Amino acid sequence: MSPLDHPDQRVLPLVVRVERAAPPSRTDALEATATAVLRLLDDERSTSGEWAEAIRAWETAAIRKVVRRARGAEWRRVLDLPGITVELRSAQVRVHPPVPLDGWPRDLSRLQVSGTDLTDGDDEPGPPDESGPVLWMNPGLTMSAGKAMAQAGHAAQLAWWGTGAEARRAWRDGGLTVAVRTAGQDRWAELAGGDLPIVRDAGFTEIEPGSRTVVADAPWLRAGGARPAAWGPLRDPAG
Image (tube, rainbow, N blue to C red; front, side):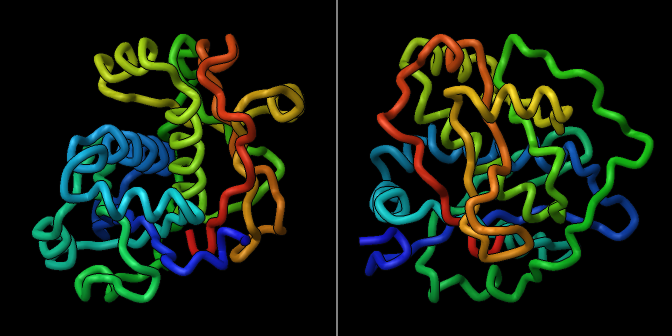
């Protein structure tokens, strides 16, 4: 059975705060999203608490992620819902436990997917610290910020699954931080041709089915890590 035919389809809601006067930079939003996904996966409520059942159902099917934007009163209402907020430089992103595909809480379902076209402006992120995890975006694809945020979240999740207990402890001690950068063409060809976790999009929005969007790289992943037998494609119908 295809993951998309699973009877209990769930989606992971992610909300980025986009105030008109002070929107976040694209890189900050991407990194905050990836960190938010990691903190959700590492949270006790997800592993053995009140969110565990929803997390298991979500991971059993396709790990869909949808990014929406909020501002003002919308953002304040979002904060009243169960979830985790990550603040990273100019970005604030809130992740909520998975919800049924057709059962979003009202205050989340009202939010718009459009309007997340963020830019870095003059805030060039610079080279990443490659001693830690780096999520490398495909330079040959054009994606909205919301779409790219969902892809970064996918890649962070694959990296988490491929990380052993000892490396996870070190990563956790460092705040579960992650860098997101766009690879150069040559670097992308090298990364995508290797054995690192890579996100392949289902092609529901913006890009062609099977497009390779992000490669997750970290020293322990290059060394083999606790890699599953197959990373497999990820479904991202709206993010």
